[in-house]
Structure formats: structure tokens, C-alpha cells
Length: 356
Image (tube, rainbow, N blue to C red):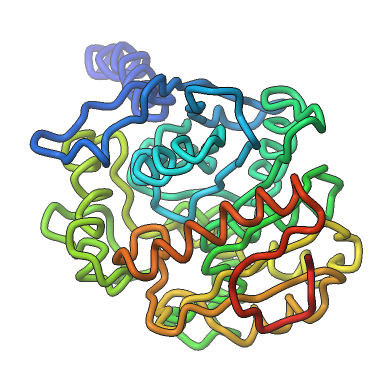
């Protein structure tokens, strides 16, 4: 009996070390073999970490144009996305003269994990994401006002961007791409699911996934198969990075993450009038991940909001086929230029109140 107890005690430090290693932030990733150059890291790409208080370490990356930058863009990816999936977009914007920063969400991408299950997106609140976004702007990017600074939130990353603006983030503009203010496909009726997620979090069971939702799978659908994009090549990019880098793999989120999502939705609804920053919403007409009515309501409640529709596009606008993605990219660049020249206006048809 004593030998068994000794064996258990000796094993504890090993388990602790293993758990610490599984949760640790991850910087340099291995480029998948045969990945086209346009999907590889931009020239001069550099990684860094940001941490606020006792929060998790979050990974960010940055690349700059060859000449003096004309503006700076901070990208907040959506659930399950790592910075690597945005390399093509960073390259394109660098070529247009803009510095691109990508801040990965807590517990995702190369950021530190809250659980030893690395493919579990687990968070009890989106507040640390909001705090990290503010810290990135104030302590890392440090906009000087000489060139525009714009924040872009993709999917549920738009929740973080908007919440940061409500809490005082200083930006010249904001872009909410396929903003998710409600989940289009909850595993059970919404009211029941919200109660369940919050109940599980309150009982310290929030680290569990909803039954039937699993972890990362090698044979899981890529972006094209999941109907996130019409472009087969771009839809395969994020899975390729995950296959080559186990640390980047993501499955379904935890129940606590869902609770945090709905908490953030409730919070932005209370404070939209605080946002004076011009907001551009880029909306996909064939979005299977995010619902359209909440986006319309949010844009209407903001004091300066323009909505631009991409009727034939799917959720991942930055990964869409060229005819859509080129217009999306131009809208992003137009927003940066508009902040540089107050008389400039996006060359797109808008659907909402005039923000420019």
C-alpha cells in the first residue's frame, strides 16, 4: 500500500509538468508541406505574447509593409481560427501599405490553454479577450495618430472588438466581418441551451462539451465542407496548419465558452450607445454560422454604422472565392483610407446609416 502511495506521489509532478506543457503558449509553427506561398507567413512575420494580470498568455503576430505604413489593422479571429489562417490576408494588406497585427483569442491558436485538452476552446468569460485587445492597442501597437488604427473582428471576434470599443478602446474605425451576435445552429433550443451552459459553468462543469460535440478530427470537414467558403483551396488552409501543428487543433467549445458568448452578447446590447467609433459591418448572405437579424439590430443601434452585403458569400469572407474576397479586401482597405482622408467614402453600396 505504501509503495502504491509513493508511486502516486511521484507521478503527480510528472502529471503537473505534462499538464503545464499541454497548456503552454505556442509560437513558431511548422509550415505545412506543399502549401502555396500566398498562404505562408508574410515577409518579416514576427510572433509575440501579451498577458493581462492573471489572465492566460495570448499569442499575437505582426507583419509590416516594406515602406512606411499607411495604417495599422488589428485582427481578432473567430472561434477555431489561428493567425496562420490569415496569412494571405496579411500579405495582401502589407502589399497595400498596411501593418497587420493578429491577436489570437484566449485558449485558441497559439495562446495558452485553460485546460489540458488543447483542442478544447474553453473560457469562462470574454472579458480577458477584451482586456488583451485593449492592452495590445495601448502597450504594443501604441497608435500615434499619424496613421489610422482600425480593429477588425471576425465572427465572434466581432463581439470582442465591439465590447472593447464600449469599454474605451481608441480606434479610428472598426470592421465587423460576418459578426456573430447569436449562434445560428445551437445544439438545442436557445433559451434551454443558454440556461444549461450557465448552469454548467456555475457548477464548475463548464469545461465539458455539450454531448455529441467532440474534439478535433483528422477527417473532419474543412472550410469548404463546413460551408464557410465557396473556395476549396482557401477552405483547406486552416486544416492544413492544424494537421501540421497539433498545438493549433481546435474542436468544439466548452459549455463555459458558450455561456461567455451569451454574456458578451447581453453586455454589448446594454452599451452600444457608448460607441462613437465609425463601424463597418460586412455581412455574408449565405452565412450558416451567424444570424442576420441581430446584426441588423446592432448596426441600427450604433450611432455610426454602415452595413455592406455580400449576398452570395459564406461566413469566412476572408477565405471566399476571389470575386467576393476582392470586394471584401477593398472594403477593409477603404476603411483604412477613409480614416486617413475624412472625405473618402467606400466604393460600395451600403445598407445602413451613413458612417463615413
